[in-house]
Picture 1 (cartoon, rainbow, N blue to C red):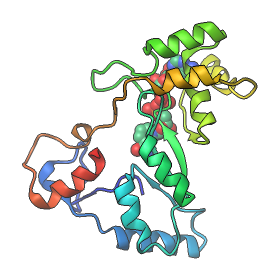
Picture 2 (cartoon, rainbow, N blue to C red; picture 1 turned 180 degrees about the vertical axis):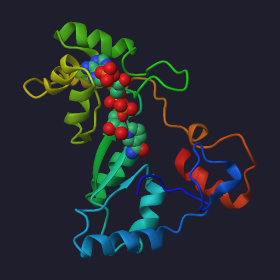
Picture 3 (cartoon, rainbow, N blue to C red; picture 1 turned 60 degrees about the horizontal axis):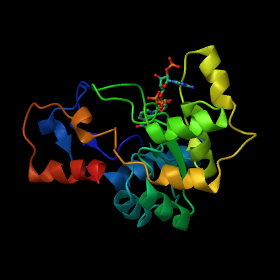
Length: 206
Ligand SMILES: NC(=O)c1ccc[n+]([C@@H]2O[C@H](COP(=O)([O-])OP(=O)(O)OC[C@H]3O[C@@H](n4cnc5c(N)ncnc54)[C@H](OP(=O)(O)O)[C@@H]3O)[C@@H](O)[C@H]2O)c1
């Protein structure tokens, strides 16, 4: 389940118009996904962009717990609270935007331009991307990183035979936190938020 968000049926438009957001039928969707698994139509089922609050709701009725929650995570958005929650519940996390994502929405990449990471990378003879990926790996989190460049693909695989020191880990924890995947990118300015759909949008933001 890609996002805990639903839009009115009809031709898909992105970003979603604010008036088109409807409450999510989480129980119905999860039941249908469980059925797909029981029928052998899919491998283990999981969620994405779920906050602790949304996971808590799902776990109240899920007969099959999600195998995974795929969320934005990197040294610039470390997901401390969500990671603690998922570890307690035995849920595995996978990080998207492990390198800060593609430079979108006019923002500066929070990972590749980070001074703390640059400093560590220089001291270790690694790239900033490798420091970020290695840090995620050391948090026992899976990684979905993307590159179309052969050299960078190779670089991104070179993270398995070295480790970060305690001091470096502490430096990374101190990095200022900023989320990149924000609700503004999902919703167009068209229409107006209502008390019904705002509770869903809230879920993405918290
Ligand atoms: N579940 C969700 O809601 C969700 C949301 C967003 C993304 N995702 C998934 O997450 C994955 C990664 O997302 P993403 O591509 O946006 O984020 P990303 O992997 O953090 O960033 C990829 C960007 O970094 C560049 N890059 C890759 N390796 C590099 C390196 N070693 N040094 C410098 N730059 C490097 C890539 O450009 P080049 O190709 O030119 O190397 C690309 O522009 C994708 O599979 C995507 O589908 C999931």
